[in-house]
Length: 581
Image (tube, rainbow, N blue to C red; front, top):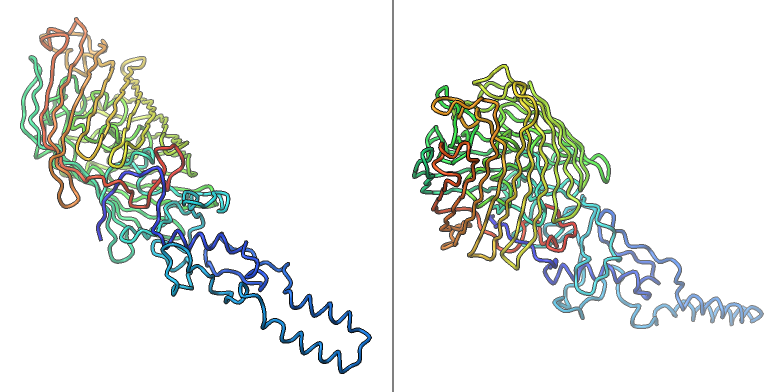
């Protein structure tokens, strides 16, 4: 069974039957004739018991007691006659009280057939017995005060045929909120995904992107290339020991489709190839971008624990990696600040642990600080020589804030004796646009301090993407980075700048995509983007001008959105807590 991820409208809607089942359950305590019989509606839902009314005495019994008092001094024969009359009295109750206590009368409700007289909520699809939160407050005519407060333990309790997810969401933190590694994205702006349920009660989420592009970077340091940037991720979730276990893999063929040297990208730096540092090119990603396992489990009604282990994965340090950010998902290129903020998204050896609530998560990691080597189809030596910590806060469906700090031991193979400290922080925002659109933005700060260079080098990124509707997407990015002559390989002839001299560089990118076809759960778009790079006068000669240009035209394939999340609609556009992703 396959369904597609859709944007979430502001109102929750359930099929008519589910809405009226819940409405009847709420109206039962007020039905005095049924309460007079001392009945309790059989909901079989934890945390949703209907009170038993024991205060209403039957009118016939009251009448019998009164008659007995009046006939106190009557003869035994008259008293016997009175008792016989009392015994018959319950058989002549008013018609409103003759309904069976187990069969609430609901045949007059719209969409409820008269013959359907017994409705137990536990028989509705997609409703877990172990869930305790009942998010029905957005149903027409239903007061939010009639239901218990949403504790997040049952985010996404929706009767939607064909969209059932079996794995519970710990504290209401659903799969949709997950970014790269253990990061969170705003609930209101998830990444488009495909969902499967497979034998063995496993829920499988798949998402990914594939670009076929022509890349042209101008100036003496630029180059041209025809290639393909791509990645695919699969996550399989299963209930385990009161929590959720998740196995993940993320794969990329970049090393084949853009060559082992990567693709041209002016002002980019980081990693090495054949003993020389890469500059003005973005390195390809490894085949095994992630291979990991994540376990999350509530320990109280409001607090949970998480464990994450990965031979290839992401430590709790930076913000959501750029390809997983909703604000950059349709932008094929990496930020030039990548190695100041989120470059540790591929680390060969990661162990993380943390505690979380529905809105907060505090994590710590031990990991391998060394950047991946040029051999992209194997696992680098696994070691745990570095550490980091990160705090994440999602106050509403629209926002996600992170702050992290880490120590990286020997991150660069060409300078094995150097270590680095990194600070990273981000603010992500998202909201829906109509039925098929969303608008997501990110502000990301990163800073590095090398043991060989005193002080900090800083970076700042602002990016945004608006999926205007099912066919049109616009995106943009602006960056400022302090890069050294060593980073840009300007410390060698013919330039000869000191390696620790820093230059303020930046870039501004704008792009547009027109989706032209949909098939098999995917959407195919034709896009173009242009970049204006900005360099100081001191290095303008190396780049041919102070504003060298870059451009790219591409085809993009990814899952499409259809206006509904897998776990049910949410009200993310209004800033309220959603199902949650």
